[in-house]
Image (cartoon, rainbow, N blue to C red):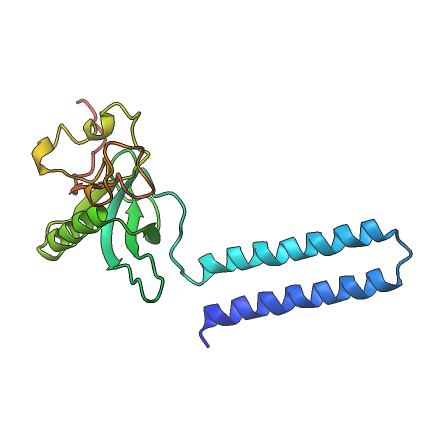
Length: 201
């Protein structure tokens, strides 16, 4: 058992002991039964909250929204498997970029629902990384929905160099419907960081 797993087990045992102590107190306390029921429900809710919090400790891929701008470090595509009932997933290991296109956080894994168009674009981006060409990315909700997704990169590269997965999925008959999670992720060659202006002499 790794050190991180032992922390999660210790936290779980600690919550179980607190829950058992609360139960013992409630059995002998002279409180109305609705108050006891509320105490049990609140304690149970904390079990769920602690489990969700422990997921991030164990390094499981987050299903949170991708950062608006990021550097793609690596990806893994898990194809759907109908016999096992697995709908498939796309895992992206990314590092958040700030407004100056500099890394501003620790790398984190994100899980996106499988989409054939996104899988193809992700595979291409991984190939570019393997060829020594770092890849940056923009999240689905970046921009105002008026074609402004590319504005931040126009000064560095031409739009034809952008691998854009926005729009519907032709395999499902989708036209230009509202994008689903992870469907409108754009991968581009990683832009150079913006340096602060030099002091005028």
